[in-house]
View 1 (tube, rainbow, N blue to C red):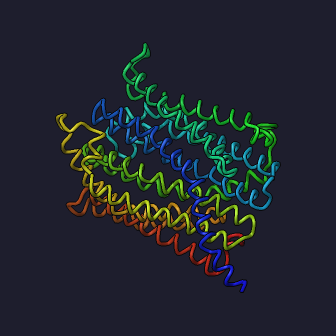
View 2: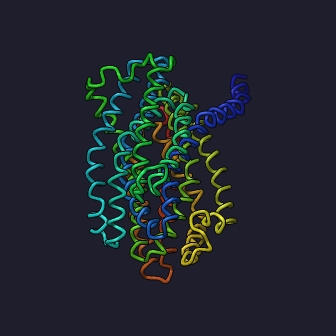
View 3: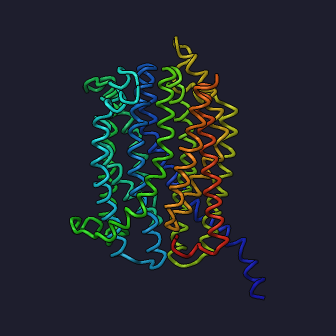
Length: 466
């Protein structure tokens, strides 16, 4: 009798989990779109200057994200720790405050070396064989853009706090307000409107840094003033250390940062290889990559929601809930990415035409290449979605070491060698690079899903990872 009742409840529990995941996920998804649009809008504006400015911007933003994503990964440890604590004790205050505070400490500690790297961006780009003129322009842009790192990471820590409290709407509202502000300020500073100086590419970097600072200030004001959050007193005694928690954040977050770095650097490396193939290939790659990144924001948000939902059940010691939370997010992701794959295959020319005017002389070759690369992006949509949501599911269990190893092997021992070989040893050139990217994503996605399924089969969903 009890078993029959439990079976009758399963569909209801699954429906509830899907609704809870969507309720938490959609503000995170839209927030990811808004975050991505900050640099996407900059690249679109740079395209108005010319294809060379677009190429230099692509080099700069890829180097920027190679470092910034590592910082995002390290600070991402805040989310599973908060979810575990709130799952174990719903009204916990002291432990939540300490985790957020040390997350902000981690943000400061990781920003310092990132600043050093980005300040020397031109030298780094020259060292890997990029054209001197492109490297120079990209370096100037990076020196303005780099100041967005610290407020950007600080905001993401506060966003994780809001998500763990299942109140991500505030962060979304702030990000949506920031988007038109960033576009307007970048346009004014790049082209000298409204009495401001015409700074060209540098103006876009200045605008993003200013807006990122305002975004963090707004989030800090929300968690300080709103009555639902002010009891946590997140910034009180900010100078007080909690070294065990600080080390735990690094212990969980460093593998996340490395895994994300493996993923981002293979795309960054692909951009640098494209730069060696030619300016047209580089510009086309930048366009196709930005479109693929836009579609990626949905599974990224669902993966972030999965981390929280899995972490809550993990903290409460409910393995059945952990399983539902993980597979619900995975199913939603697969449904979405199937749709985007169809769209990318059906309308490649219309999508790439947003970035460069077709009637302008010299743009046809770039647009044709970009449309071709977009077809390869369509082919790996399902794998891309599967790997990011599976990683989010495992983070909810604080399982981060194995995904890091899987990412390193899949991207750099499978995807990168294959892409380089096809680009330089066959007539495929840039298309070969995209085939390598697809192979790397497929290898990582399959291995991560197997890792989750093995933990589920062995009953390890409510135990610390080994």
